[in-house]
Length: 150
Image (cartoon, rainbow, N blue to C red; front, side):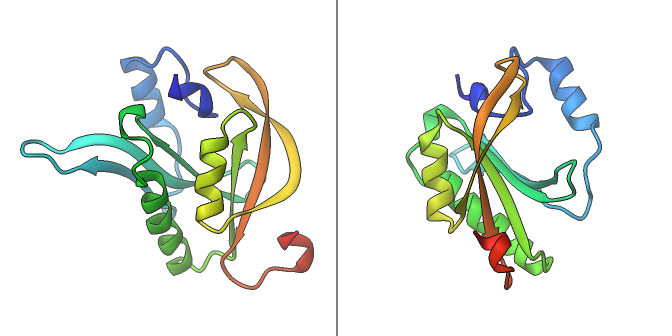
């Protein structure tokens, strides 16, 4: 299931989990967007993309796209929009992480210009209920120190 690749989403995901997600604190200065597809009728929710603040203070981009809509460039297009917002906010850099068993998400970050930092660290996966190795990525939006860009 797609949720196993998300760090903060529990499984099963019901109404109580959705309410808890909507109630948790979020930095109002950082964009968080739902991704809808236009249809002949009501728009169809197909994913989400946004920025959040890590406990370390660093800003991190996260995203998901429903499986039925994979391989259409939706995550890349949404990521480009969120990166443009991050630039408008004059953020110097943004980070992202990908569980090692999710190469498709790593390809999205590559297309967006992120660079692997060379670091792998455990990230808690709510859906898996355990720490899972994740590769860390960084995108410099302004001039970064060489040590940060590595």
